[in-house]
Image (cartoon, rainbow, N blue to C red; front, side):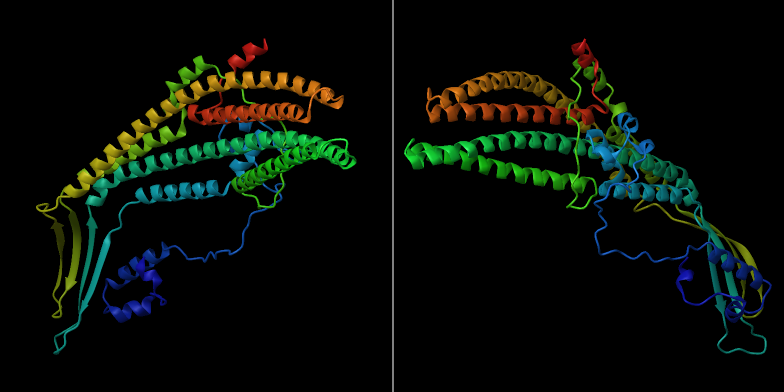
Length: 475
């Protein structure tokens, strides 16, 4: 109530100062008291100017019952022995800052649905007339009216259903956002594992190059090898250090991105453990899942509820084109003491407006939501088909890369023995080792891309990937 914002109170003394002492006085006082009793109280909520991100995850509550996917809810969460890929996803759901804001939006939607279900308030009008040239027969007059907007009841049902559908839409959008966070956590975990594995290989190679350069540099000083040979080893060592430095920056960027996703402070050092393997694909079951995307994916179900909410808003606009009707009761007394009472009614005439503009807007909005839903279905189907084709190519490339890695590994090992006894020169030996290293990096990156696409496929399909094909391979 607006009256509640004034710094003074309505008590019996104020009422008596406003109105003459009449039999209606006590009823007016009761109406004011009842209105004030329903007002909400204000409590300040100051803003904080400091970051509240933490580096200690031990106090973060990860409730399995709140996880958005069954495989997360069934997985134990124990950060003491490090975090595997599933535990990272669980921590992201529990502590991601953007999800906290999305949950606040859900609270707003519930509040809006509550507001939509409330009945419109009646309107009370009060006035007092005081004669300016009062004679012996003049008294103070008053006018008291109570009215109600009937159209608020006409559109209340549609508005309530629209708000309830919006709550369902917001709830499903939150679930979809949780899925996106889970997907992001898995992607960052996959990249971290691949980068760390590649870094380990590069560091081993760096140790070998450093030892070889130290030997050739010493040999060059003694005149046993040419200076060009030592310089060639130095160039290889420097190139390896550049590659390691570039990869270290990528790892640092990935680590900060993961900390940000998990709602942790930038200097947090997480111990990531376990593998990033994801089950192989069963394309037959995937095709079955594609046919039920609308029932499986929260974003599509959210669009359905959004469309249902818009249907109700269109219905409200159509109902609002009927004339606005206000009905009220009046009680009055003029300055000569004549009292009257009656019934009043006001009716708008929908001649020029008739709410036609709002109806056109709601119809256009409904058409937009209809097209957006169809586009989302088409985009998801196309993206799934693209990933499935890429998966076949990547699996073939990974197989070839791993086979080439094995062959080059044997060749590099033999070349090292041959180089030690002087059967091959330093350039041939260096080329073989570089080729082996490049093939190892290629296999790691192909597997990383393969796993990243499967993580994306998990979200696009609306659940975990079918594991039947993997089980058949194991048998």
